[in-house]
Length: 115
Image: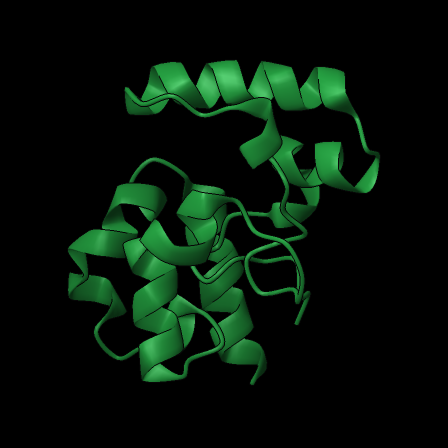
């Protein structure tokens, strides 16, 4: 399985926070921090935009590291992605992502079938 697929099925490889981190792109960090601040109704500074990926060792954004309920649940349950969890179909946490992103659902369902 592609390690850049997050627990929820989002593709970290295309995430602008990750791209800003690996390219050390401060302009992109600023753009992402403004977008995420508006989206989440909290101040997110460019310095907070450092992440290598949800399931990849290394830096994570504050949200991804300790606030994301999906990531925390998957770590606690010791699943590779939500696709490995028998409760996924009824899970309100992951539904917030896959309900609006059919590609994310396809990725984690495919990952579950590959194992």
